Image (cartoon, rainbow, N blue to C red):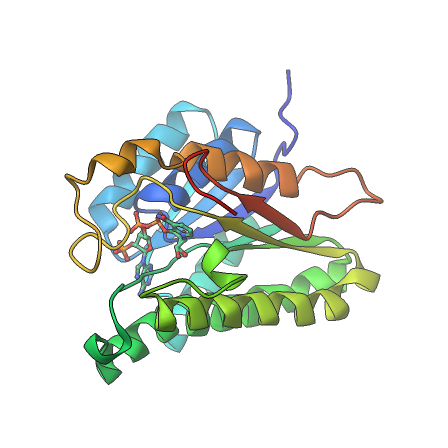
Length: 243
Ligand code: NAP
């Protein structure tokens, strides 16, 4: 039986592990071909083999999503290979948790550049052709930290609020040209996120977090809506987390 995304082409940033990796696989299981990008090329090659086993094509582009020249190369390689891109998943992200005074200006730049600048560069690159074709999906893997302030997450919250503002403003530019914008806002997800910068792998509460696959299913839900419907915001929380 054909998947719900048969022969669509998706670009997933931050695909080397965690939510991005699970999202690339979930989209491929629905029939999409996937451009997988991050900096860790070995992990991307392993993922490409898994996508190949699903009889879908994967293009590996090792790139830093916060660098303009890397994103231009990502855009060119994706179009050389597939001719068009239907879905962009802005997922690459980093975080350091701690009291404000413990966050250096360099760490501020690292978080803002990876979370917001990369989102800006990738969306700016891939959106124009979607608008011309009058079809496309721009998905943001944001966070509950983009919807409210959380203790010890000042700068991370700022980057995720920035993505949320960007997404809501972008929706105005896209809606009448049939490009759908979705912001996924998960609570805690059990990934490598913030290991060494606020979380530790041996934290037992990680097991009670959402799994990457839960968020990947939300991305699939967002990009498989009927023509008249768009899902702008999906809030997700593990059962252990209050709203
Ligand atoms: P993760 O397991 O640490 O994965 C992060 C991904 O981002 C990796 O593939 C990493 O790849 C990529 N990345 C980091 N810097 C990059 C850069 N400069 N250029 C390109 N790729 C880069 O974390 P995750 O939990 O899957 O996070 C994915 C997204 O979910 C993030 O936007 C995060 O804010 C959001 N989120 C996470 C949680 C959570 O609790 N885990 C909750 C809500 C939202 P390379 O290192 O190979 O480049």
